[in-house]
Length: 273
Image 1 (cartoon, rainbow, N blue to C red):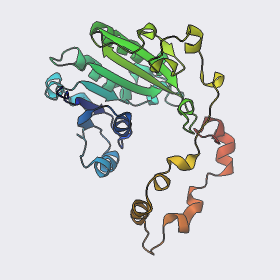
Image 2: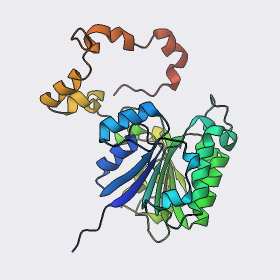
Image 3: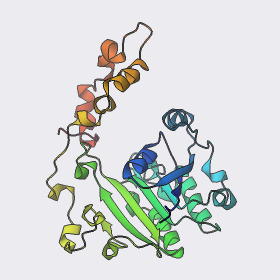
Image 4: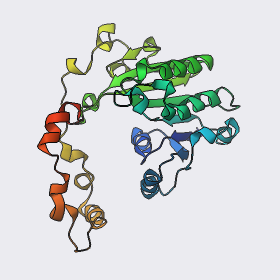
């Protein structure tokens, strides 16, 4: 049997490439055909990581024709979260930083080759915003099924405690493994498996209800997870003028002051594995 071609993927608000790394780790046969980000520093890092520089500019200048030419099967989107946070005054769609995402939603409705799948990530609070309402309205108009989640990395054994909002969307012709939770907002990843015998109560579990076993943070540090040769090469990239690494000369620069921990510690995304 002939192997089907890889999915063509567009990556919006690409940053330094976290979504692309996750896509690669998922094992899905996919090709990122273009990425978009307005931040030149983030694009520098993305280019270093992947050898390709994202399209830099205001997403609001894109047209439906611009996106049609990629014929992408899937879109990955991590739009600005500030409009949905307390510090961002929770202006939702009235915040200028939300305009580009709303523009993308509008473009989808005017495309000849709209995506078949979407993955949207944002801060907790997005799910109660009017931007979220617009997202679901557009997806419904285009005959998408959705499954929404508020999940923490802790639920996947990663020692990082900040929950995030996620939306999976597929056109109706493409079924989810567990369609019984379509159009629901869940706080457990249970239904992401193929096991459909779970009870509704198990879907309503949240992070605090689950026994969490995290891997040590050192397992996630790049220099600890690769060979000595590669580790030495990475460290050499960060040598200072005197030949010493920042760790050797200025580790105190990275120490979080106690006063900051006492004031903001409850909002920091950390945990002790």
